[in-house]
Image 1 (cartoon, rainbow, N blue to C red):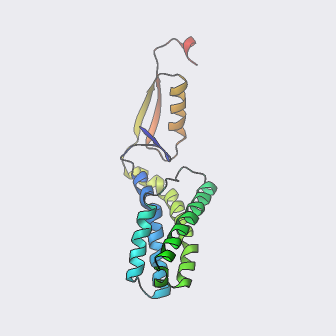
Image 2: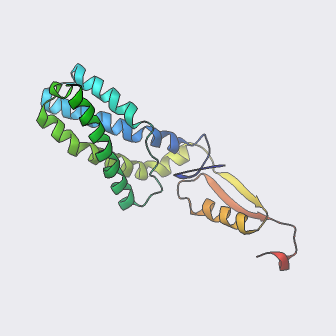
Image 3: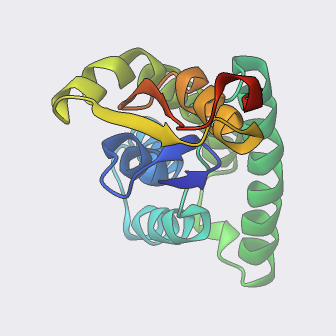
Length: 178
């Protein structure tokens, strides 16, 4: 097992793959939605901007196991930082004039809403996605010591894990166990 910010995950975890692209895709799609709404279509400038946005924000931060309020706060803070970089870059390269100011203002508001909505949708779909990956993996921890108990606690408290904890294996006498 490896530990990541979203809990205990294996490399084959579908949720971690989805989380990697979730925020960049939400930003791209929200930009395209704004382009269609304000410009009547997705022009070359919006396509270039969407590719830049995707690569600036990829990989997305795993937030599945974060409290929903902390997730929302982190998304907004990261978006403010990202938007500042994008706006300054567009301003200094004169690329900002390619876009409608009203469209950019709308996107600045819509983008974090799209990201938060995508994260909330993933939380709803997560149990189904976990079941798609097949049966849960079974775990037995060798050694009922402080580290083993801590690992067992993490495994059982991770809500989006495909690991079922079965117990400990320890051949020490009961008096020697914590």
